[in-house]
Image (tube, rainbow, N blue to C red; front, side, top):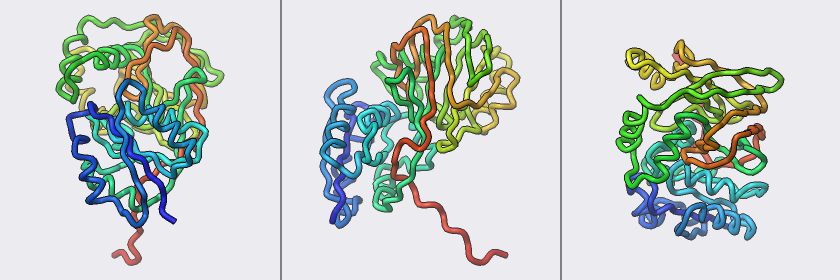
Length: 302
């Protein structure tokens, strides 16, 4: 029996790769394996509604066609279901897809779906209501996510321009954290709570994070002086951010945060107004996902 697949397309995500998705699916999806259909989102969080309806109808796979925000909408709709998530990355950052080493070319990402390799990864639940597949944060990254949400332009250049514009004036904030049973007070530029290892764009702010280890990786970051940026920047892109003198890193099953004075949180790349008090909990192996088959080891090696 064929498996049922629904592709949910965010028509405004990223930089336009999603516009030809129906042609890409027709030419690359294994139609002996799948019966498929395509739905387009029409408003914010519409992807959650469509995914929830598809899960209730018993679809085998729901594919998010877009960026990390689109993925987050879909997983929010798949909560507590047996429906698997597929990803065709068409956003700008594509943090979760990059961590999973999925191809960023849509046609190749579709061919990964044809392999039908099911794995389970963790999710992080915030305040019992918001699900995080990749990364969340407070402070400067949440502030930038909030501005990007209202921006007309998308993509790395728009993201970088916002960072450069707002960097000089954004001040560190005071936070109280309870990391499992350990209490900390920190004055931080931003703090991230990671399931995957990066924001996107290959910027690895939690280089040791693993998607299936049952833990949240916390990175507490001071404001980096401009003269240190040429040193710290390459560490982020070389997966060695932990070597920076401006970051502390912890691992935990759950984290309480108070002092989020502006109430905004970056959730998988999207700014959301959540509140002053935050509670992050890791939910191990709670999301079924289609990903690449592991590479087979060589039988003979010299």
